[in-house]
Image 1 (tube, rainbow, N blue to C red):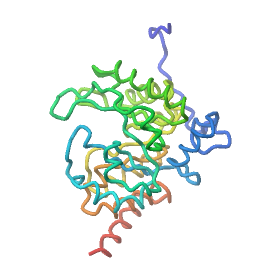
Image 2 (tube, helix red, strand yellow):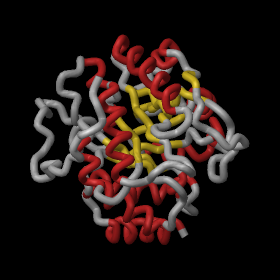
Image 3 (cartoon, helix red, strand yellow):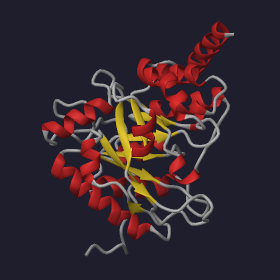
Image 4 (cartoon, rainbow, N blue to C red):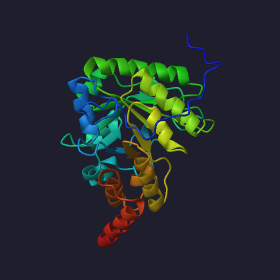
Length: 295
């Protein structure tokens, strides 16, 4: 067993050197995966840009009805044309998303306590691999609680889902949870993202932080960055710009899109940053132009 005592803290992340094992595939760390796994990843990450715009609307699995998501059946059709991936529960997908959607699907497969419980860190695998296959999921999303009371059980959940995913060539998206008592530092995110990648995740969803480029370099699979709490539109676009500039493979915007006063226009502006290289200022100007046209 490795001894944590006496280990040196790594300093050199070789930021000037690209990932060395890309092969002929556009997704980081996926060169040695089989064809089926790569096909799913190509529905998540655009083969031309290598990036993704995810839209998370799975909040109801622990929050119930959420501001901006009261009617999934009305909001999703407005946003679907402008995002690459829908991140949702199986119930949300089956009831409110047309099966004709061209978006990739990130299926939430873990579940736990509601927001009425102070401790959300104890989740279970709620969706079996058979249902993920039936729904043609492009990846299975598992919440993980590194450093929290439920760490061991969440990593057990993650490992079970990864093992099933390899059996049937479905990628696993490891979601780094952050709570009231958990760090939000580059030290924490280097630990959490690397752990999830080394356990076998093909994608990791995490948060932006100081020294973000180091976190990206140290993780051998693509990082998709959560938008987090609702921000003013210009600040949310600056966040998107900073994470893409810092090396992230995409953003997963939920509240910063569906709680915007103009969600479809916001989704289009985020897309400009991720796929077309817009700066945050250019994207905000674009957003304002779209809004003015609507008015």
